Amino acid sequence: MNAEMQIHLQKVRLFGYHGLNAGEEIAGGEFEINLTTHYLPDKLPILNIQDTLDYTSLFAIVKNRMKKPVFLLETLASEIASEIIAKFSVVTEVEISIYKLHPPIENFEGSVGVTFKVKRN
Image (cartoon, rainbow, N blue to C red; front, top):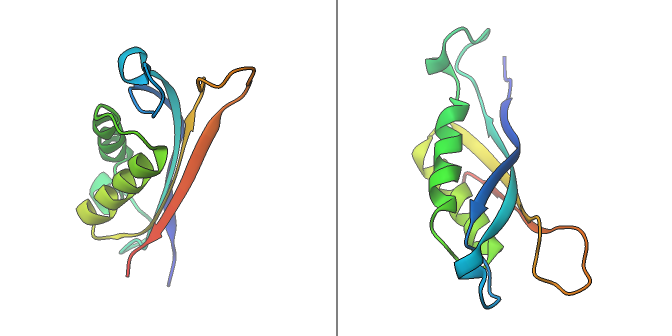
């Protein structure tokens, strides 16, 4: 059987100091992250955590990377996805969206964000 499994982290809210605008590196802001990883399980049904991707490990990567300020969300998204691909050999694809929930844009209500998708070669 050729089956694909996906592990999701959805609506993860973390605080970070990412951005180009003056003061963002000091004040910081709230971000929302959605992450999907794809992999091909070795066996089904999956009965043990060792036979899947542990979402707590994925969360740890996201949380730790969010602590390191960068200017661009594009940088942040590609670095998180690349780290996941490098760390977990079973992962075939990663898609991550990162939203800045309160961007410092005058007269703007809403969020801004990026989505990055990478597939293993």
